[in-house]
Figure 1 (cartoon, one colour):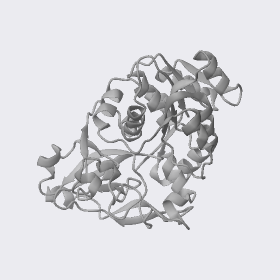
Figure 2 (figure 1 turned 90 degrees about the horizontal axis):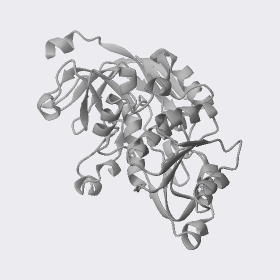
Figure 3 (figure 1 turned 180 degrees about the vertical axis):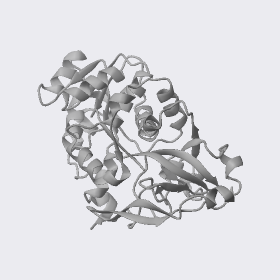
Length: 364
């Protein structure tokens, strides 16, 4: 293995986040895998909505008067990725079942395995919370090479899945977890607000639960059509019709049973509280840039709602791999842009505008 590593370049092009709107294309040393670590040649990496929140300076990432920032700059962004295994530290091959040349991914969080949450099985809520692309221990994938640290959760990816499709495994795993949090029943009407990459994944995952109907909401008619091809029964554009009333009309006046918010916009939260029936389940997935203010009386005294959060994609990666492998999503319509890594700024701008893109990927 050392002979293979010796053939690798010494330095690589890398995107480095130094602060809000201060992302630079730099040269950095190619990392080497230590014991239990995996070195990956990145083949495809996504630009996520949370990457944009970080880039534009959301308080969650850079801090405010109430909390410290989550992003530890300078750091390489990128937590959606797939690549080729080019290096294995001592013990890594046996631990992960990986070989040189395999395609592989890693769950977006590398747990500490020592905190209260890790020790009780809720590793995705790890108190340390090292997520690729935001923390010093877990430099991300906007680079030619990256390391999966010891303790990471790694998976082999079938080579039958095109690499620019396999990069969607991470967001799809998040979508699956959000759907699981909705506790969908067979007779339910499920509303998924937002038909970006994550919302489309939620539509496909919700379809597997067998509800009576799935309703997709989005301001783009084109995205609503993709949502239908992903499994939605109806598409509603709230800018063109009264979405709350339309959902009530479809449900005998009651409202939806499950509402999953995946837009990242505060108005979608309020919309959902009015759209959902009494005793319904509201799943909040988005990373919000702004603070959200709603009438909490609706949640409590008026409707007695179940409010569930959703974070990351724990234990969902094998399901996501299988869904993509089985062709359950129109991947060529979801991955709309493939750019070289050097065009990372163009990729960021495409996702910010949201006018022509669904999933934007960078290819080192």
